[in-house]
Length: 322
Ligand SMILES: [Zn+2]
Ligand SMILES: [Zn+2]
Image (cartoon, rainbow, N blue to C red; front, side, top):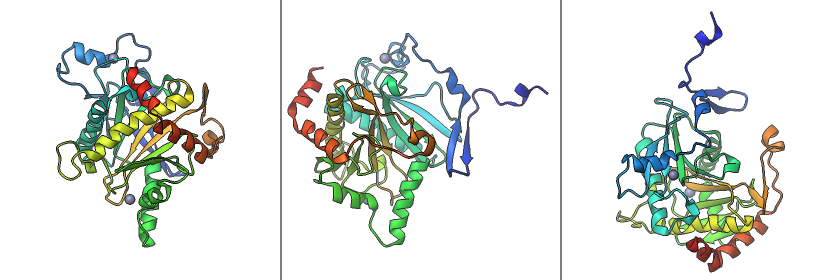
């Protein structure tokens, strides 16, 4: 029998458990066919084809090249704006609120069926962004990825010792400290002491909730959207500050860490890959071979740079004039 007879088709995908490293790896050969450098933007095509109505400003669409299919997982694309030539950091507060609503909607839709809903944005061709149109992605999968497992284990370990949530503890420690970037009414942002990337920033809500379902949107009860609004004002400004230190668009990932377990503490990881103008921090040394990270800077120094830029109104003005 020919080998090809035994192999599953290209739409096949699977999760594979690595028992040596205690982590899942995914294999999805169909992804090899995805468009790169295609001339027509598939997200603008949603508008021209009428798939999306004239009033819709931000929307969720299926991923045309899904890494997973049910019951292993589901993949969606979150379109941030009708306008092709913008970045997340160009969005005004109300427009960013629409993006936050997408994050919440996609979580509410998928969390009951999957162990983990990973929502993120990859910005910058240097780190693999293939479509320019401002967008994020969601992979809902039937396994919990390794980093979240490890964070959850820290939460459980604290619980076993009778200690409070380690995220609540870390937030209290970092708030207004030397690594703090932003201290708001609802959110605290800081460069974590163990930052892998020079400008890596964690954005953590003061109120303990585990996933996007715990964040009230405008017109809802409780905080009535105030926390969402503060977040919507903060995130684009933070990325504008990244652009300032890079003297150009900072390649970054923005990732929502969330779990449907009340003991977990929701947070946003901003992973900017630039370390200085024109220079990237590539995880291609001891990071790639051993998972051992080396940061070429001190979090306190980089946090002070970001803090100064966030306080400086010219960052905002530059963003608004684009
Ligand atoms: Zn487009
Ligand atoms: Zn907490």
